[in-house]
Amino acid sequence: MNKPNARMRREDLGPDESLCEYCTAKCCRYFALSIDTPRTFADFEYLRWYLLHDRASLFVEGVTWYLLVHTTCKHLQDDHRCGIYETRPQICRDYTTDQCEYDDTYTYEQYFETPEQIAEYANARFNRPETFRSPRPRLSVLA
Ligand code: SF4
Ligand code: SF4
Image (tube, rainbow, N blue to C red):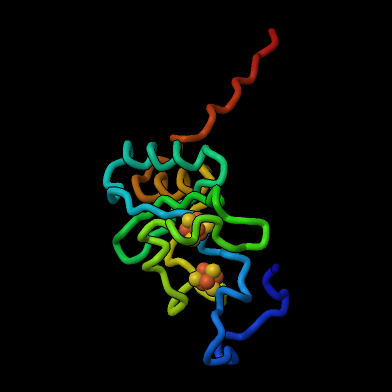
């Protein structure tokens, strides 16, 4: 049976209901890993490389940087339920609806989606306006 489509507000949930019943499994459609804090210009080149890949983004919370990959778990079924519920990993078992992304109101302190964004950030931070950009084509001087 598919999950209901109605948009349930968290505060209206009945005592015996699960918020997940009303969700399209947002938490099963990405993973995020903390990464070393970039400190040098070369470090930001690595971050730019991450963002050259499809579905990769970066976010920062406090002083911690994260690589966020928007990719759906192979075991998420068409009805938005877990296909390996009995053997799902511990991280899935530990995750709760308490502060989950169901409501979608959260915004990151810093969020980078494109290589150009992280390049611009690094350029400003290291005062290197000329780097990361393609060299300007030379104008040929006609004699
Ligand atoms: S934990 Fe939250 S985001 Fe994940 S399926 Fe349940 S309601 Fe959706
Ligand atoms: S194993 Fe199941 S609960 Fe965990 S991410 Fe995949 S579909 Fe979601």
